[in-house]
Image 1 (cartoon, rainbow, N blue to C red):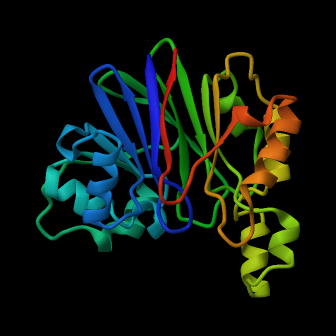
Image 2: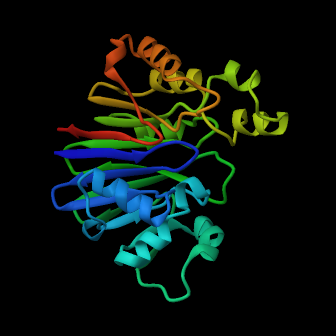
Length: 258
């Protein structure tokens, strides 16, 4: 069995827990040290029990809290070379944790979990997302990308659990309070996924094993959970309550995949 839980998802900070047998990983940490510890403990996880932190890219809502947490508790960190060059400024002078620089196309293993990074189009130096596999079940994560690619869809096909960005409703974004340059960035090829594009991605995946779909990284100003649920449930032809939303403050509780 594998299980996963969000400690928070949105522009104010992101973190996703993945656990299989004796292995517990944290994907990103965009929270201050005290807040991150509180959020982990709320999920029933002590920071000392983490076997690693994986970083998707350098933006503060994903990487801003990684190195203080890693340094305090001696947690190994995995990230791409491009991300490393952008976050080196955040690292303590006396590093108390192992740092692993990965290739964005090469799978690797952390104890009980096989990890497959894959590159995504986003306005960062060398951004990646990941799938996690324990030999029986597979979890896929896709956030912080402006568009999909055939490679992304190949990586996410066959997942038992899927965390999928639904950042904005395009009409809300275009008629909302953001300045025009920011609207162009968010909606552009290197920005974030809108609800309709995320639904279209689902149509291109093998979903025959899917047990949980979590919509993540919702914009507080340019989206609404009801719009997300309407869009994704229509794409999957499923009941609305089958779609779950990752909240900025509360994330979501543990989901088991078997």
